[in-house]
Length: 311
Image 1 (tube, rainbow, N blue to C red):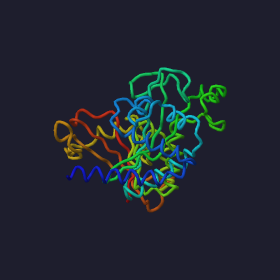
Image 2 (tube, rainbow, N blue to C red):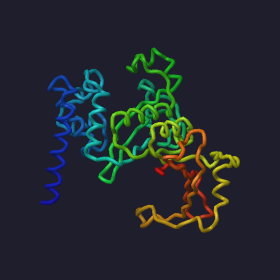
Image 3 (cartoon, rainbow, N blue to C red):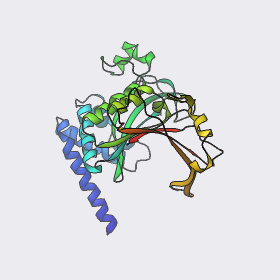
Image 4 (cartoon, rainbow, N blue to C red):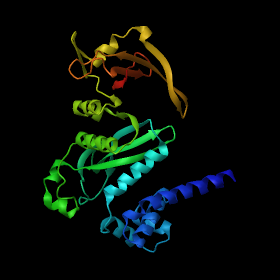
């Protein structure tokens, strides 16, 4: 009975989310197709292609779903904003805004933004699309709140192919870092109650990304390369040199949570960095730290983490 009550509660909440965004679809048939499509994505169809989603939803063909996605008129960005606001309300304040990208392997050549690019999905250069995503996570849960398609420079300059793929005429080339900065600005300007931002090395090594977060006065923890430079009035060091000089008592063995084989135990070390006399206020509102973890202290991870935390 408890399981049935949970299912009923989940169904009611999903319906409330549908009601919230229904106004973005001007016709009743589009609203019903949208509901069926989302339920299909959340359902047990083994593959999430048009035919299987249509079959799961009880449709004879995928034509309705294809029209919904390809030719129907509805405000995609307004719907994104509705979802972001809904997530903020349900998950609450004090969470973390997570920036990351992923690749979608494709076989064709006509999809928007497709091209041969490196993707961590396959670990190599592949024919794929790259999307940059923002997620919001609290102790109550996690959900995606924003997205941008990375349009390769070669495709952005080919306006004929962009038009065929229905890429807006005003859309040009932007790096993943630029897309990430746009999403951070958008989420925080809209009132997403994040207490901090985190991202991997692709974004953490970008000075412009870190500087934006400091201008927005929000804390962050981001991965940086081991060659990252630490600058102060006393000199300049590589971050891995700073770590290697850490004394034995600077290390602590802690678990970062349970994994499939039990507690995930690592050696951790952290060092507080000097204040930046150019950008930091006096006294500073935040402090900068470098943190590293290792399977064992002698086996340093490739990526240290740079952090800006409240003073």
